[in-house]
Image (cartoon, rainbow over all chains, first blue to last red; front, side, top):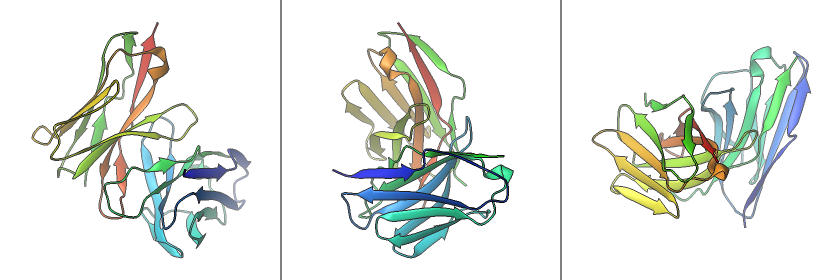
Length: 114
Length: 112
């Protein structure tokens, strides 16, 4: 069966520090991968998606970047964190076959910027 | 651009009753609509998908309807239980690559 792992679960970082959140998927090949941010009481905002190794599309301009160095690995990064980067970050995957596919989420990273 | 509206107020119901949650969208009708459940501090979990040519979809105690004329989906949980307490999110297809737009969700609280 397929599984998705995100780490760390919780992270507290000072303003201006770098960031690296990692997400890995097991049990599937060529998945579509997604990074979301969820503010308290708000919906999920799609940040990046990827349909293959090295292929990254950004949905909103921001202080973050994403990379996909391997088929089942998706990384969210920042060189210098801002206070506004605080939030709940979720990684998800879906089968890359067609668009009638559900997304499967990790358990997220709670990021607090001090 | 597509916009999704879910009731931001929490829905409180008594155990055993049917819970009904609403998802309204604007602009174009999507090819399909999905419902997810999210527990506090966890990622959303997929529940049901309904296509535009389907009026109704069922899975155990869950039922989803899709009215493309009203631009609305209703999500029903029959014989609700306290374990059904969670936030329920509605999501629509947005462009290619299976991208989704999510509503903010409605929190359901089922009381014993």
